[in-house]
Length: 97
Image (cartoon, rainbow, N blue to C red; front, side, top):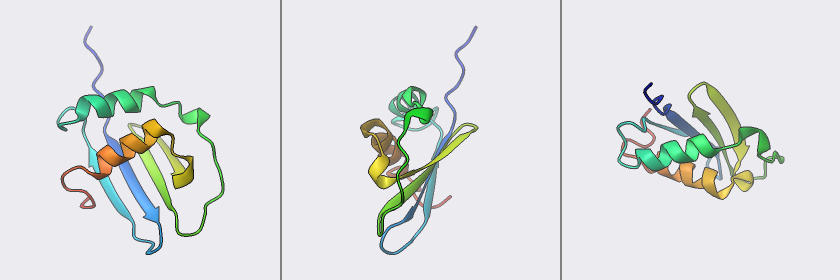
């Protein structure tokens, strides 16, 4: 039995002072940091993330991992989720999807 491939990860960042929205999608199978991205995505407990109210001039992130999607405020990012967001948004082609 073969391992199931890691799902694509999409991050959409919006809000902030300018309100600009940018989106980036990566496929862990082809990304240079794909192993770390897949490990971070697989280790997330999406049900255990805090949910606080939006704050002025702060970002929000809509994160899609395969068929799962969540929106989280900047102040609620766990260290692992912040690392995942950074890896996806710092990818080549950032903001071009």
